[in-house]
Length: 123
Image 1 (spheres, rainbow, N blue to C red):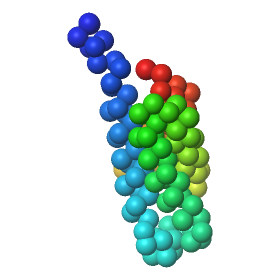
Image 2: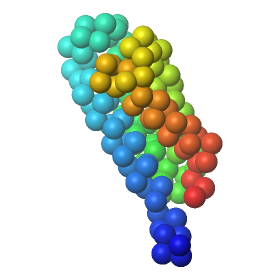
Image 3: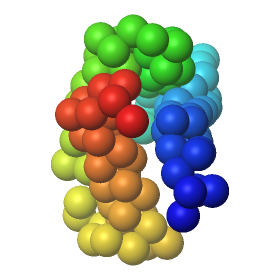
Image 4: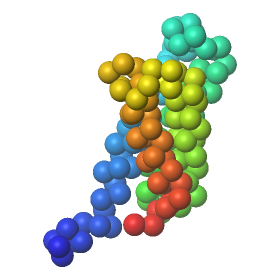
């Protein structure tokens, strides 16, 4: 077990980078916003807010990993807000299965966001 314990201070980067990359990807994919808004059935202003929150949250989560606990927690808070909105507004009516448009992926990202909000940079 000592072998695995030696990785403990660094393993958070796997969660941090994969979650941040997902949010960065989904944030950037909303541009151009005037094209995305009608496809998403949302007002343009709301899509701008979602896109910037996703991008900002991803960047904050990465930056926070270099020592600023508050950056990690702010990034996580943004992710939680986005995931709660995505679950309630889009995925909840489709159930759990992601193949049916359900919320299992969003719940996983919500749980990771909650983890980083509560734990911050403590490993």
